[in-house]
Length: 346
Image (tube, rainbow, N blue to C red; front, side, top):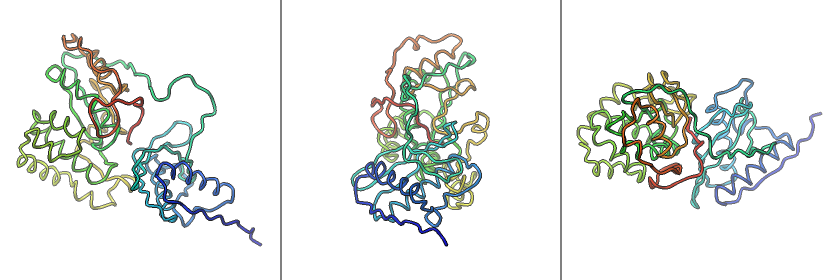
């Protein structure tokens, strides 16, 4: 005789998204563990083999969406990034949005996608701040004119954070070093990101003198129409480039054909796949100085120092001190600050 299974019903109230994340999802996990409630039929959180961080997180996100939907909640769930913690579990960040606002939360999922953990509880005490990763000091070769590449997704909050830190450095050292923005070869933030990547790629490619002012405007306003006008971009020339590049790389075609999407979740953006592969780019942001990938605190001064250290003979501009505080993630004022610079999309 089959063992009788206790059925527990949870009514999801219409509360703000952060309360829903920390309370409702925690209760859901307790119910699953306590009653043996099966996820089968709710969402495919099953699998015997390890998945990529994006695949496993995607399955967890689907479960979260279905859970809120089944409870009548209006909370919208968007995956921001996913990564391997190195301890046998994946970490991922989602944006939870409702009429009352939005918030980003970090959760965890098993590597096969079969278990979802709303919270990670440290089991040891550490005196090292987790929100202030130490700046890496790799052996970056020096050059007369350093080459700096910043790989981002145009709507990744942490890519935007890195761009806001890099912009003052571009303004200071723009004629002394080659500092360029590049794009991860897939998008995690929908159609708007695909076309914003394309737009910025073409501005930088064909109207490079306009790109700094365009980017300075975009990271603060998220209004490309306004920024095109403010930067004086030739929109006719831009549209020609975007259309030609779109056709050459099948960007719109791939966006509409989900069978081409990475892990079934993310549309490809293959314009710079060769560079992504060359430097092993795995997420946004990724910083490359003189062909070496570096990890830096996301402040203008930290970026400036790293680039100045890559000169054979640093110019006088390197004596200028830029803001030392880390910039804030996401769209917003370029001088806004944050205590965290550890996030990424990828």
